[in-house]
Length: 310
Ligand SMILES: [Zn+2]
Ligand SMILES: [Zn+2]
Image (cartoon, rainbow, N blue to C red):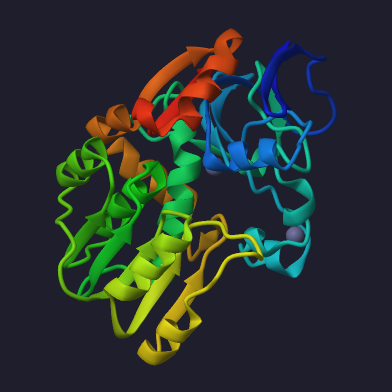
């Protein structure tokens, strides 16, 4: 089967054996390119990429795939916090294990999520990153009675805007750099930032985004951290200190109560097909994956999510 392998400084389309072993066999219909994939290439990964995945099972069910499998046995997994499982650091798709940007992929049955009406497998790879944004907004306390600002207008920031809106925040503002990001934020009902916010979600993944997030937060407020930062980051500790800002990092998604971030994210996307269509700025067949990655890594292309169709 054809698959997309990290081959720094880019990717290559390779022919590999179909996956065997445990898990359900999925015919992948959509796989989107994430900033994490670009980071994994930078780290020198030689694995197959792809953790934002949707497809069809052997019995014909359309599913999105949770990319955090967990071990299903430890105390964290049993409590639904599979994002806290010790296996997370050793099983990350595309950097520690082969991902699913390929014609076929195997995943545990527990990680397959049936799609709600209104969302098809050709677009449902977006559920995975949306679940990450949903989880961050939920942990940071976005909801009724709160003014929320999101810093960063990439796909993940826009997903956080949508999540905070869906959660019932009084007002959601978006700090974005590019006109197409601002326009999509307005479609979601986001305003331009002004004043201070109870909750600020850092979704730019940059130091400047961190400092701007702290600036927008009210004293005693909360900064949700959706961006991924390495140990070399200069953290605005002094500014967090003087505002007594609660900093809430977030990692992936999990189960909570009777539901999961993943299912809630899927329902949100299914309810707004226009948002899904606007997030998907490019589609490429798998044989054109090299070009797809070039487009995804070039900000001037206006790319939000670039989808590979195996
Ligand atoms: Zn991702
Ligand atoms: Zn576990």
